Length: 90
Image (tube, rainbow, N blue to C red; front, side, top):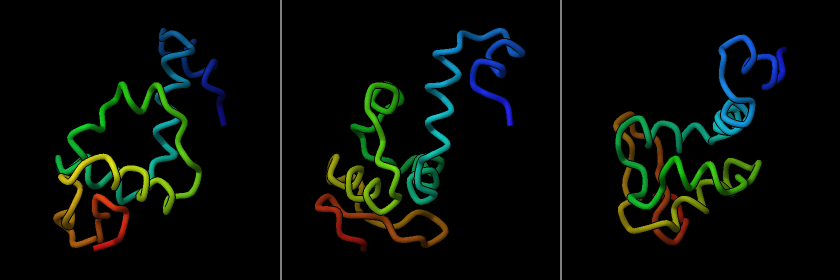
C-alpha cells in the first residue's frame, strides 16, 4: 500500500490534499450512500469533513451526522436505514 505522500508525488498533488481526501475512506457506508444520493445533512460539507476528525466507529459517525440537521431523516434509495436528527436509526 502506498502512503499519501507517495500518491501525492505520483499524481502531482500536495501531500496535505491527498491525506485529507484519504480520510474520507473512513466514512461509514451509509453516510457515503446518503452523500451519493444527495441526501446528506444540509450542513455536512467537504469543508466540514476536511476540518474535523471523524470517529472511527461507523455507528458513532451515523449518530454524529444524524445530529447535523433534520434533513438527515429517512432512508437512502436502496432502503438502508438513515439516522434521525437525534441519532436514532429510522
